Image (cartoon, rainbow, N blue to C red; front, top):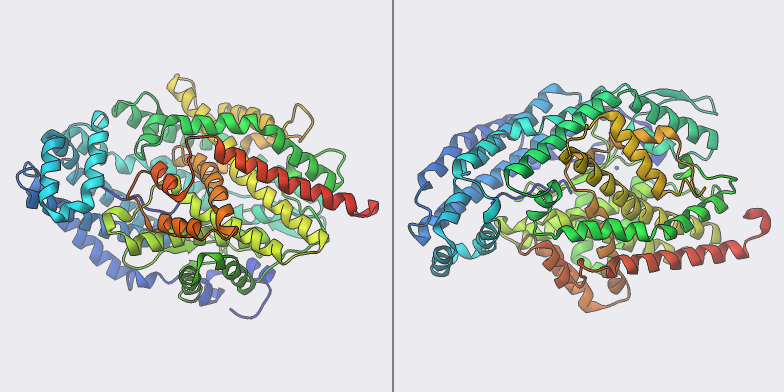
Length: 626
């Protein structure tokens, strides 16, 4: 019964100037998170960590006695929950501190200590589920019926019974728990290489600037208006990654073999089944997504052709995919402007939702700006149950960054409401629903912004950005999901997982999705190495949930945006439900069934309507502006 940590941007100056300041010491405090609310200092963290380490053995007194009485079972589960809650808090602090500067070996050491402590906790509690299974469902039901404290554990106890076939003996469960630090080696090695040690290349742009292409800079510069610059940025970045393909292939192989080992050990037929079973998600949901998106690639290709038309290109290349659709429209924002835009967008969800987001801005829940050594990307971490969630973002002042802010605030709000409404054992929501709240916020954002924009060029740019969101969240993440599935299938067949093999696989799948053979979008050979800097591949079968969550959120948001009060109330209940049910059931309660094609079909219809409007705008623009 261990919760999953959900880790599902001063002075008056421009956003561009802020984005260029990479010295963390010079970033205004208001744009940094305040981890002192979790622990007042590293010394306080250390004391709490040592105290927890000494208390882990207290679980032993319950071994062999869990079913002896209802009160004993409740005492044991309460104790396990309390230890897990403190472990989660400790882990949240150490991991976020390490992410501030991935070059700091002391902080990385703190994170490693937590990995080891989590493994020790798993070993100490390994007897619990085998012993519960040994007691039998009839006995557990009888005990639960007589002890009010066990009410909060009913769902957990029923889930233990469901997973009986894949639960090992106490000794074997302890052995798997002890393997935890070793099992995280591949992901940790990738993280240090990608964020701290990798020799990212420098290039000279057409304006004479020399820039270092770290991940934050790459994400920004791949959207430059100058086509030659875009090609140079993408070619240099992925070629540099390709130079380390053997290393990246080795770390990825370590991850894939780990996943395969645990799947076999727990007697699952495939790694995919093992990954999805924890949340009781049918394998058909995954395969239905991949098959359905492949079926709807013509809609994606229609968008790519539209992008080519708007940009006025004789041939669309992969390096053109992030270029601004309407170069004359400058969508740049200061952090304060971004905050206000998000606050306006979420107004349909009510005053408490909006007020909580204001707290996040004012009370330093967010580490907003990029800095040297800081972890790339963005996330929300709700692991400090008794404090509040935190967010890491690398804000560069573009509309995409405003969208990222709204996205991560969606995660944060789900963590906040679930932690507030649910006791700790039920507060951790399943990963499968984790991206619903985030993409729901993005849907509210684009709707809010478009309502205020009448200018054709700006509207065209924003509609294009919305389609980019569909591209990035549904088509691209499903492309990643198909690549990941094929990669794990290769391992199951005993085929080599090398950098070169993965590059070939990735290039073939990418060319299919982007219609390279049909001339829709040319995928240059160096794109074969794009897979190697995607950190999500080190969280087995995670990425498909971006796509399924996006489809679910589109279906739910449409009703809320239409003013359906009951839909809003169902959605807010969903945000507060935590992990009180299986994810498929949580979404059914909210109003969407993910075991059907309906969410995908609705998303494609929405996509077609947006493209219809964009084409109508193009039709009424002067020929010289097309």
